[in-house]
Length: 100
Image 1 (cartoon, helix red, strand yellow):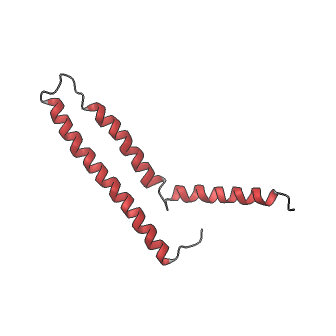
Image 2: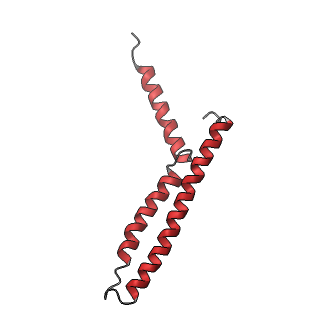
Image 3: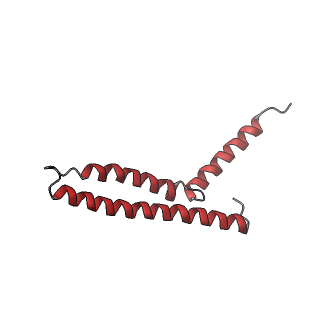
């Protein structure tokens, strides 16, 4: 893969940093809200520990958000490898096509 010009590199760095910061904020809100829900669940709002259900559902959403940011986000190593593989596959297909 060719190196990025400085302006594109800066833009990509800002975009990735913002995505990571968004995930960290999401994780912090997840912890704070679920601690509050656990306290409610433990001290009188229902006879069963119902707070585990939002914890699990939201936890799955947080995990998917993290995967999107850290594994599949723009500029990630996995995404770059998949893009390069797809480019190579398309080049090979294009080379095999008969020329008019």
